[in-house]
Image 1 (cartoon, chains in turn purple, red):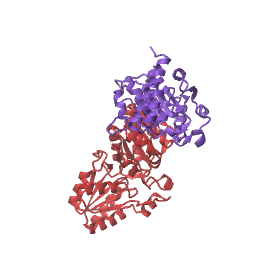
Image 2 (cartoon, chains in turn green, orange):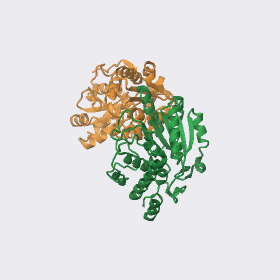
Image 3 (cartoon, rainbow over the protein chains, first blue to last red):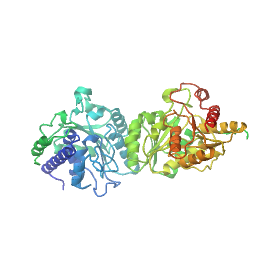
Image 4 (tube, one colour):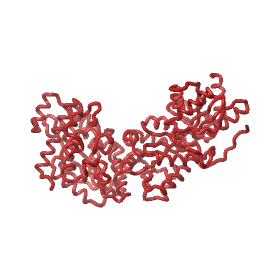
Length: 274
Length: 317
């Protein structure tokens, strides 16, 4: 039975707690983009969306999840640990030498990580490769790619969007964590993507826009994507960067900065973990 | 010994397409992608026979590499083809992140390598692809010299678990090897023995090296000739023997000076048996438009240049 919305919200909060603790312990990392993606990752890994088996990360029939916005990896490590891909205790070794918790995702090093990312713009192309392999082999596994909105400034994203649309890859779902910020400031100020949904639609994608922190709405969108047979689906998830920690919300100072000891206590307390 | 006369064979790009189609018949997991140059790279030879396993995605080299990364991650053996200048330069970050770092089974064919593509000029002439490919950890980097070694290299690439870069040439290539040539990555092929010096070459320069060796023989100088088709891993054993037995080397390649075969040979020798080396290559520059033969002459990559380099290196023994 699928967990209730309340249970999923609780899991999302736990993933945020892990993310903040990991980044604080490393004194390095990107809190903002982990916090904005917590419900998206929760819906995928805990909402009954992904077909996967933590004991068999290489299961050929598993659904693929590719974190193209690689700097958001703390929230993904948190989800993978909670699902049993590796011990939760390993999370606290984030960004330390000899750790499997690399600063950005590394395929082949960390169980459950499907692609080496961190150089933005590449995940959707890799997702196309998986989707084409599924089609060639007559398999029904699905491929999900989570991107940032700022990441969509990369030209390669649009090469992939064009190709996936023309190939009618209906097992491919792109999710854009649209938290409206990139490293240097607001996406709108630096190089606007609007109308983002219209861009995907013009490349023959089915587009769904949701509140990315409404986990029930995110789940509904993911299920709708599964049912869309005509081509790929893009879910534009409107999110708040730093969501869940008041002083990080929409505060781009925390794009790539760890909280200090005092800030950590406030953050943990707000997330119900202190 | 008279000058060798090699029959003109297929371009190595054409041999690549033929071999790819052979692979396709033998292995259902072999897939091919091209970025709108399928008629030029000859990946179309595979594509017309296996349309369901062939993806011409248009002019998108970066996307092509990423797609290959996903295909390889899901168990396929993707061969991606484009001009060497485009797939290496435009796809380099994707090759780094999506093939080299995770050591995926991605096979990269860079066609129209070197300046012998001719009239199209510098934008299409790949003179740095070997250096770039060698900078990708775990990649095998191979520049076959004729249709027979190219065919063998394609089959070896498919049999090898890991990333491979093959450079293909545009012009027809003299046939310097027998159809049943023994071929393995990292194993140089000795085409001629000699005691005075060793000429190490790959690609089209192998035939030039053989012409040069004949010209040197007429002057009483006996040159060993090695087809060093694999730049990475370079055949350090063959080089050590060459350094020990002939004590002077000339390296000839259709590439810029930095980062190519010459660099690999020098590193291997310096780590083992040092010997003087002279280079025949493009140097540190780009070429221009022109007929292939005119370009090879103007930019100094013909047998005569190898002979001159041999005479220089002999004075350094």
